[in-house]
Image (tube, helix red, strand yellow):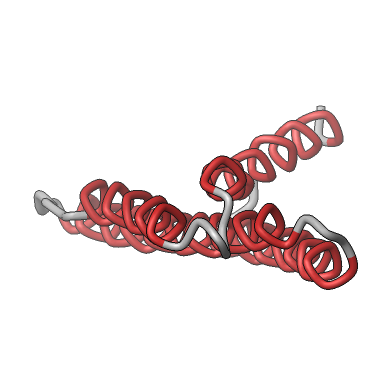
Length: 123
């Protein structure tokens, strides 16, 4: 079984590859707002994934110590989603809202695909 840190490192590599493709799409196509939205959403999605990882590690540590843990992890992830949508809404000439939302989900889609591949390889 992989540790959370190993999963996060793989996710970061895959997401940076996607971001590189989005930057190329932004630079060489006429769909600048779409690719800018994908970049914005992906960055906020990566931030959310990092928050989730950090909170899971803290909760695991508190559980091992026998303590109860309350956190603002869900609130922070929700707020970052709202912030990404607010930026895209405030600057529609630079960011497409729908592609921002799609970009926001990309880290989670990559995680799902990576987990499926991992389980297929290890059965």
